[in-house]
Image 1: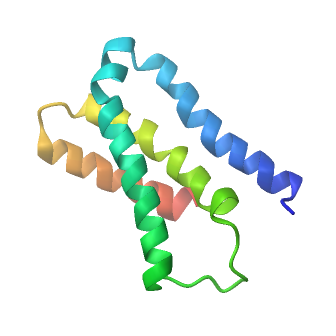
Image 2 (image 1 turned 90 degrees about the vertical axis):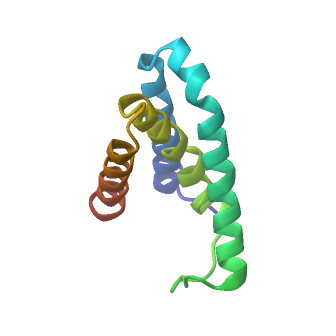
Length: 111
């Protein structure tokens, strides 16, 4: 059973990044949406394959993929990647740098 707090966290982690895409513009959304969908698919496959190969361990009992990991895959990854692609269009070094900073911020300060 999912707690109300956990459910609220999942809703926020999905809704806030997607609401930010209202400001990206229609042309940019169409331009970068395929890359975002690819990233979501890659992340879901990475989560599932990582569990199968035991690349990481959860010290609590194993929880549901749908309520624990899927919100992170469909929430911040696609909108963040689309914003980064927009800001660093045409400059691969800038994209890698921004992506590393965003991932580190998300991993160490947010989560």
